[in-house]
Length: 94
Image 1: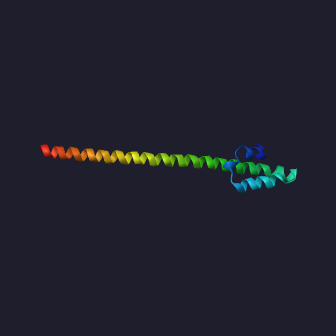
Image 2 (image 1 turned 120 degrees about the vertical axis):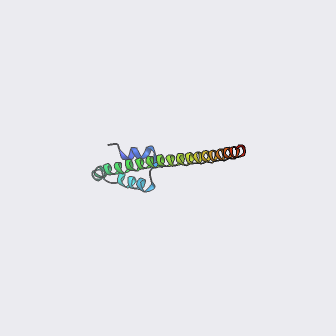
Image 3 (image 1 turned 135 degrees about the vertical axis):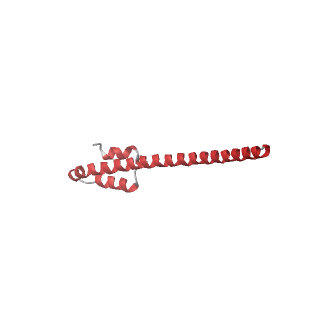
């Protein structure tokens, strides 16, 4: 496992303040207690980062879906206008 203190130093902006406070408290513990708790802290940090990445991916996917929906709506409206115009032309010549 990686050292939680080093893991926290790399990208602290991704980690909630509460987890950073917890890491500082764990770091202040005596070595025997710290060694027992650090693996759990590392798992919490890794899990938090994984959730953050998943959240970003979902937000990006939703943004793309919204954009695609706008394009599809525009295309549908354009197709309906073209259909209506063609019907008017056909009704006028028939």
